[in-house]
Length: 337
Image (cartoon, rainbow, N blue to C red; front, top):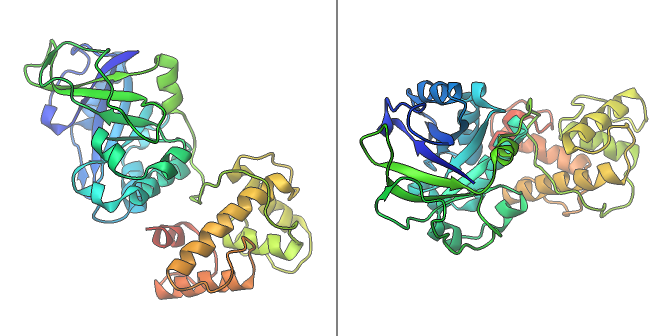
């Protein structure tokens, strides 16, 4: 287990190297218009002292999960791959529901290749349905205050009984901690893992094109024909603008390979079951979302074709976007906001 603190601008000037801790988690951003101007100073100080690191975004719920995730990622570029990335889910944002939070988590993963963690109180864990977030394999940092004040760390602090997650990755057990080197209250936490486990959460990645992240399974439909594959790779932005001519040439193979890289399946250019299964899930996500918004009127059959292609175009036209039928970054952001 590791013991550590989390801080924000309320602890401006704290010497993160001197205050005893195995890790330091620092507030980086909030909403779409706040950056903690003391974040980097505290971060670099703790990093130089060899401490484990985390950075978090405080959601305000006033825009969309995707927009807040983009704001967070855009402002933490120097920390990606060495700090745990965290969504702070409390106060007004809670009423936006788990879907907003999951959109944030999915977007951060899509852009960084790293699964972020989510922080919330034990009561929020148990009052909402977090099954989709758990299915996405996002770790939980839970707040349950067992003590109003605490002199030093208490790694054996009791855990709040939680639903959905089998266990939490980390517990915040007091906001009234007292540690040498800081004369005021601190949030104290215990991480239920070692240094290697922390590094695994921090992960690493270079970023990929944002797309829904499907869970691989067996395909639900018959093997797709070449024209269906070509609609898929255009709609899903794997080879946008490639011809839809039912000819299996190098452009089709390139689109298949790009999709395989995004899905994390073997990259061989062959559109088999391991590629079709996640592709179906991605197409189904688009069908359902466009139907919710009134643009898609076909069956939820997980098969891309001219009807779904046109639905994307109609959605783009309604939002003032380039009308090309391709779910690129801008279209994705507005579609799933």
